Image 1 (cartoon, rainbow, N blue to C red):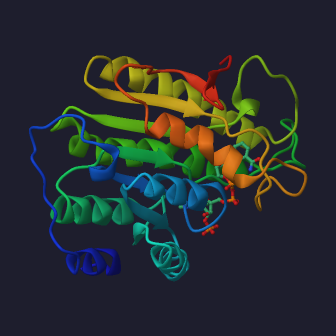
Image 2 (cartoon, rainbow, N blue to C red):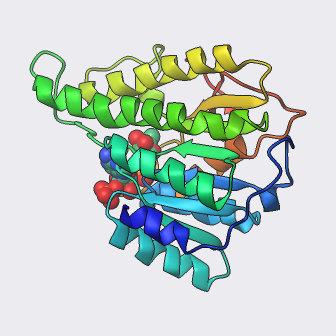
Length: 257
Ligand code: NAP
């Protein structure tokens, strides 16, 4: 049994009705990938502040547990799970944990991202670097969404947020960070395709650009992390009345694909 499974096995069982649709935010269960630092960590903090139970995904479980402990000390209901989005075994273990511990998932934030290859150019970037960017930024979100969807479909409610980037928009030109850029453009297309398939199911799928944010990836000079995260949390908590799916947003406003 994996460490993540063991950790969650020790949690109290909180299985809920499998036939209900939208629960109040304070009764929802969320999973955020790449959440031991940066935007992911702040998204976990903000989601937990609504009262949600949040699973904090981290590829280094020790770092995830450290981060989760800090949030729990502030009163948040946060549990760390080992989750490398390129590892199907990690994903399968997290599904099993959620199944056993909660029986449902309401929110999935595909935040894990890497390979911001700002110095590469499209004519010369190593193909292995492109493959690695796609594996994390596109296929990571794809794998995780496919695995988590049954946990949403059974109660006809879900919010999937793919954390993308304005540089993946087809309307934005430029030759920098080619592997990262193409991976985010592909993530945008995946967002639209999945949203189209799930239309009317109660599961909304949107892409969000957090803007330029001062994290390890964004570097100094960007906006504060809490501001970038707020737009992601907005999409994760979209009420039925707004009913927006298959959109690309920044700060709750639509932006061009
Ligand atoms: P960050 O500070 O570099 O954090 C990235 C997070 O992703 C870390 O927790 C990292 O884990 C995790 N990660 C990387 N590869 C992973 C994998 N294979 N499996 C699981 N987790 C993995 O970056 P950030 O700025 O918070 O970025 C978060 C998201 O926002 C990314 O999708 C990024 O593309 C997007 N974004 C950021 C900006 C910006 O200006 N910062 C702008 C537009 C979009 P480790 O600690 O183990 O490395």
